[in-house]
Length: 102
Image (tube, rainbow, N blue to C red; front, side, top):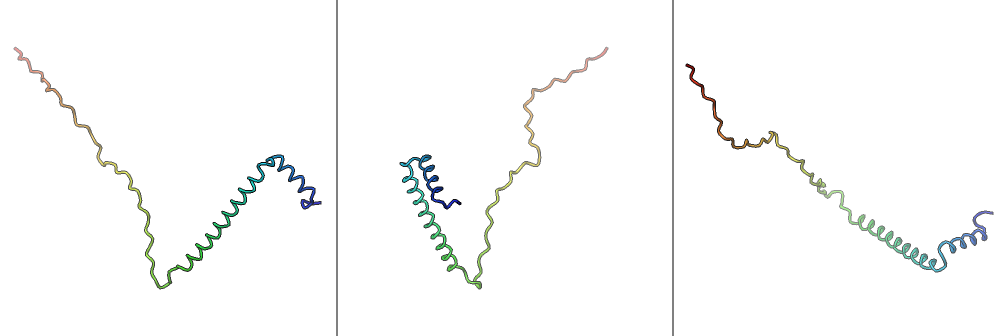
């Protein structure tokens, strides 16, 4: 007896009903159905995009422009000489005068 047995499927169904409740099951199945429909349409859209891209390819003899690199942010510029604050205005100093000896 494997997982294909009907008794196993009945047990699994009962466990799901007990876990989620019989009122939530239709909502869940609807949302799963919507998700699958959206997924299928997106997959078809991707296929159509691929065929459109393949049909619009440039012939080999036509030259394509080189891709341009994105701009690189400039590094910060640091001054090469240290910045020194100007000395504050000083009051004139008095020089000591020599006393005559005598």
